Structure formats: structure tokens, C-alpha cells
Image (cartoon, rainbow, N blue to C red; front, side):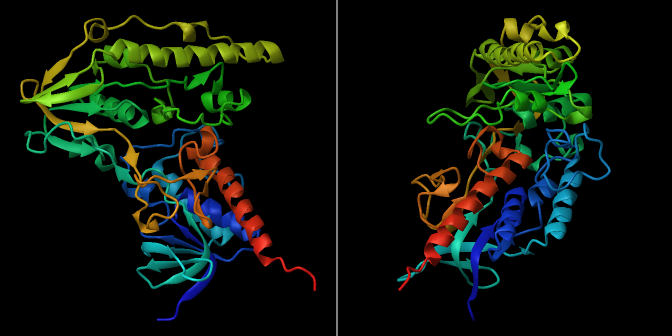
Length: 416
């Protein structure tokens, strides 16, 4: 079989891969985008039915296209997001090949470049961009045995309340996915228990502006990661038009809050006594942003309505003042444990190129430790906004600019 040749192979046809394609085309760099399923597949089939974007349409998009049939302050549905990227691919004429799986990429022997093995045959390329993102492998902690007599599933497999086994639901993880699913289940009449770990909790809107606007004018989207710092889970939601996540209000509405899940023994899940501390951490994040926003309004003389009520933190409910440290699943009729515990990565196809012993990418701003290998779509890849739709577009520009510079060095020929 003849080997196809291109300058760049982009692996992944989601937002990161499409952004890379736009910038590669702008530099007139030949490339192919390989997607093993469909464009933006994770938005289509690996999220729950009612999911909407966590940012408003005016903000969470690429610069070159607005969301059609969607108001600027609306939160697009997952179907709208997938359709948006399909439209974008057509608009920029991106060379996306769907249904093509990459099995490995290995460095060529005796010459520069890589041989990329795919389900449709081999491709040689000078550069490889791993644009598969950070949400690849669902992570379920090995806490509750599979034979514990309760259904266990990850949030990526959850679709709607009707899908779950009868009975109550224990949701472990209170980031954006966990809080939205827990709220949906409670509204459907389920008895819901929510384990809340450490988190950030921004206001959805304050003084008439969405929190994404506040993070923009306060220059927080461009905050760079501090080496060694932990990724912080963010509790934010665009559901039902968007509202601030308020765990105390969730408890008032019937959801039982718990601390961090720590162990399991004979049908009982045990929890740390850290719920109040975790809520306090979220409160400090929330109030801190309000204070910075107020200072910004005053400094710039903006005519934005005051919201003194937003600064009021409600009273702690009984599940916080007298925390529950153990739940017997059978006694409480809990039929499902839903893990909203994030994702891991799978770069096994890179065969160790640019990844550490744990399989995690080693890079600076997407430029790998392995010459010719690049990463896109990683949280905090360059800044706080990297994992958002608009953020990956700017990260892709940096990565492709780096490729263009390397390309120019390679092509240099000294005069005779």
C-alpha cells in the first residue's frame, strides 16, 4: 500500500483539531485531520441529553462564526455545539476524515518525521498534533466494588433520569457535571445525595454581566498555571438559562450534601468531615470575585446596578452543621452511584513520544518535549481559558505558529 504524505497530521476532529486546521490553512501548511468517529463526537454521544454549554453563545465560540439561531446570552445545546463545528468545518474547508482511527505514530528511522498508522493506511508527516483533548478516559475511583449490588456509571454514560435504576442516587463529584446532573435528578423526583469536594464557585451573573465577562475584564482568563498547582473543579452551570450554583439552595430543595467520599465497607460509603470546609472554599472564591468586580466598576465608573443580596451567604443546612459521615446504600434505597469524577488521557498511540511514564503529555504551551509532536485541548495548556472553546482556538494559533517557524528553519538553505 502506498504511503500518503502530508506536512501535519492532526489527530482529533473536535474543537481543538478544527482550530488547528484553520490556523494550518492560514499558513498554507498541508495537513489532514483524522477523527475516529464524527466531528465533535463527544458533544453528541458522551454527554447527557439536557447538556448545554457552560458559557454564553457570544463568548464560547470561535472568532470567525457566531452561533446561528441562538441569542448572544443563550447557552447552546450540545446538539447546537456539534452542528456549529460541522458548519465551521465546511466554512473553512477543513480536510477532516471521519471514521479513521489512529493506531500509532512512530518516528521515522534515519530521517525526520513520523509514520502515522491508521485504520485507512499509513501516512507520513513532518509533525503530529495530538488534538484529542483532556476528556478521553472516564475516571471511576476504585472505591465501591463492582459486585456491591448497586449500579455504577460515569457521568459520560448518563443520559437522563429515566435511564437509571429505581431508587435514590449518590452523585460523587460536584463540578459542573455533578451539580447539573444532581439538580436534574432531584427535579425528576429522585432522592439525591451529592458528595462535594474542593471547588471554585463563580457567580453565573453579577451586576448584569455573565461571569465570563468578569473574568475577561479582570484579566483572569489569561492567568497562567503555576507549576505544581492542582486543577480546581469549577461548579458552574448554563442549565435553564444559567444560574449561580448554590449548594445550600440545593440542600434546601431536598438534595443531601456530603463531604468527600473516602471508603466503602459492607454496603456503606464513608465520607470525610470536610463538607463545611469545601463549601467555605467555594464561598471565598465566589465572594472574592464579587469584590474584585465591585472594585472594577468603581475604578472605571461603570453604570452597572448594584447587587447587595449577591454578597449574602445563606445559613448552613443541617447536613452541613451535622455532617453525614456514612451512608448505607441499601438502607436508603440508593440504586445508583453516579461518578462525576472527571477524565484521564490516553496517548498510547504516541508510543511514548512526548509523554511521561504515566502517559501524560510533557509540553510547554502545547509544544512537546519530543520535537515535532504537539498537544492541543489540555486544561491550562497556556492559561485558564485553554479548555474553553474560544481558548483552544488561541492555543491552536500558538502551536501552529511554532510549527510554521520550525518549518521555515528547516527550509533554509544558505547561499552558495
